[in-house]
Image (tube, rainbow, N blue to C red; front, side, top):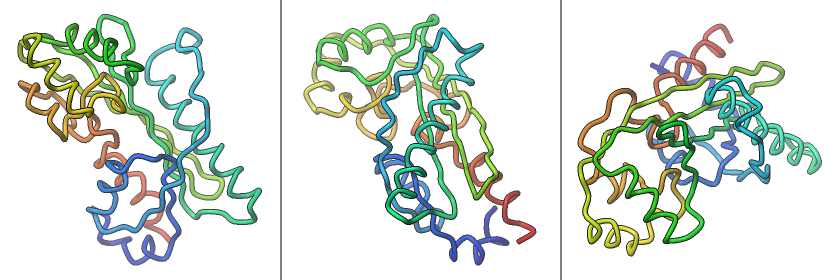
Length: 205
């Protein structure tokens, strides 16, 4: 999709306001160079103050971008394109962020077992004064898991830095029976929508 504007994008400095190697890899796989600058935003927004989950994850992604932009500015530098994203797993109206302990990871995965849940990823792309925000949501269905399977997975260490306590692109993918929606939304960066935004931004440059 980006081939017609790739010559323009390759001349731009692109920064991902994230420390996620998974998001970085997704962008590099489509031929773009991207730098990682993990945001220091505390991610302490109250979801109850937002109309819906989309607004919540988009605002969190925006605050990540703005924090990185301001920090770069303080250092006398900048990026041509800043990309921020925030992913949240939800089940029965409850948000499942990154587990803070193995016990919390066990409780999350036990609740996800044998059921479908929804993953929201909000993305913000900022180029100069232009800001585009969007959210994709995908339904993920887990097979039934027993206690040994869950504890064995937690022992790999993979769940501890993943929203919902699992990584679909890793060992956690073995729990997933099916996905309805964009797979990359669950990984943490909806590629199609992000590329569409970048194309629309730079097609007339």
